[in-house]
Image (tube, rainbow, N blue to C red; front, side):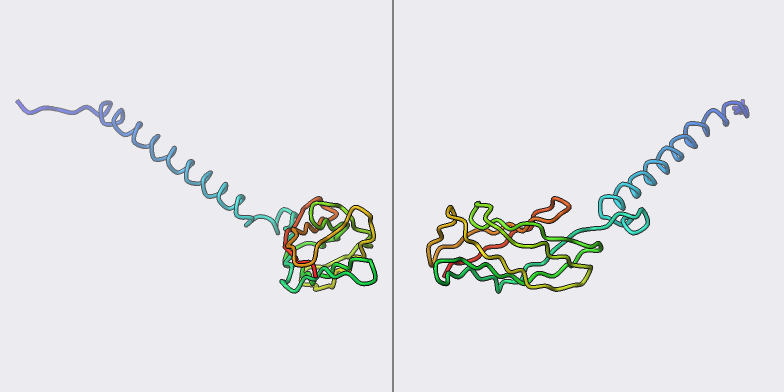
Length: 146
């Protein structure tokens, strides 16, 4: 006797398959959206931007007549305006610099006069420098005193 397969049985077999395909499609769409969000693909469409500064390796920390001078060339390689509001040299916040504003693509020389008594640097020593922006981001470099 030949076996007959009813239409109800065929439909029962297709429903789980269709449901699985729909779930996989939804999962892929969500994964692509999360990956795009993580990589910043939607930054320009949501109004958000990226603050990123490039600090050139020509930074200097020199002592002249008892006063230390820190100089760095900085370029804004991000997509939004950035304002430098402070500089920390050797883990001591000893910056009396004025705010330095940088638009996207701008390059500026950051000059800081350090006359605080707790900033006693030693020639030939490498110090970590933190450049702090108005947005609260910190960018790092190193400088050798001398």
